[in-house]
Image (tube, rainbow, N blue to C red; front, side, top):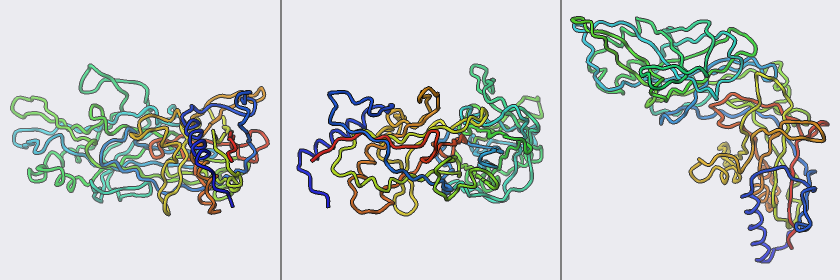
Length: 449
C-alpha cells in the first residue's frame, strides 16, 4: 500500500502540477533538464495502449442558433471510406403575418441562399458538386434534440443546383453592397414558393403554426461518386447571407417586394453516415492499434488511450505530461485535423473534456487550446521533419497515478477531433508500436516522500 504523504509533500505536488499546467505545451525531454532542475526525472517509455473505436452518436441539433458550421456533402476517402452528411432544418418568418394578398400581389420566384463556412469545407472543391433541397414529410420539432444518427423522412425535391464548382473563399455581396461573403444561391420550385405565398393568415400568425405547415427542409450535396469528393459547410445562422427569399410584386404598379425566411432562430441538425467497408480504418476498428491509428470527427472514429500501469509510479508529482502523436498520412487534399482533444467518459456514456482541456479553455470555454496543445506542428526528429500533435495530460495523469482502485477505466482517456460535429478533417497517426515514430507519453516528474 502507498504510504500517506506528509502535508508539505502534498502541497509541493499540487504546486508543481499546477505550475506545469500553466506552462504552454512544448517539446521536452531529458536533454532539457538543466542543473538547477536536477531533481526532475524524465521517461518516455510508459506503456500506452491505443484502440480505434466507433464514435457514439453526437448531438448535432442547434435550437439556440449558435453553431457557425453545418456539414453537407460526401467524401470517398481511401483510408476512411465513404462519409455522407445531410442538413435538416426549419425556417422561421422574418415577422408574423407578412400580408401576402393574391388580389393585390403577384408571386415571382423563391431562392435559397446559404453562406459558406470556409474553414470547415474539406476535400476537393475543384470537383463538380450538386446541391438538392427536399421538403420533409415529417415535422422537424423546433424544441427537440437531434443526434448524428437522427433522420426524418423527406418527400419531393423542391430545388437543385447542378454540377457547380464550390467557391467557399470567393466573397460576393448579397442584399447590401457594403459587405461581401462567400455564399451559394439555389433556385427553389415555383410550386413551393406559391404554396408559401398562399398560406392563410392563421398559419402565418406564429412560427409554431408555420412550422407545422412547412415541416422542414432537407439539404444534401453530392459529388457524383468522385474521389475524394468534398464536404461542404454552411453557416446557416448568418442572417445576412443565409435565408430563403420569396420575391413578389404589386399588381397595380409592379412595385417589387420580397419576404425573408431565416434559418437562424429555428432548430436544425446534421445526419452522418459512415461506411468503412474494405478500408484500412475499417480493418482496425475495435482492435488495439500498434502501427497505424485512425481518427475522424462527425460520428466517425475516436482513439481510446489506456495507461494500464501508470499507478505503479509511487509518490510522484507529475510536472508535465504530453502524449506525442505523429501524422502518418500526406494526402494533400484530405489534410490532418486542426485540433485534437482528450475526453473521458462520465457515468455510462457521457463524454466530457479532461481537466487539462477544461483548464486551457477556461470557465467560459473561450480561451482556446494553446495551453493544452493538440494542434499539428512541424518538428525536426533526428533530421526528419514530421508533423506532430502534443496533447497535455498533466492533471489527468496525476489523478491516474494517485488512483489505487486498479480499475482500467480510471486510467483511460479518449482522443477526439473538435468541434466534432462541425468539421470533417481526419488524421492517420502512428501507433505505439510503430517502428518509425511511435506514439508515446513524455513524462517529467518529481519524486516526493
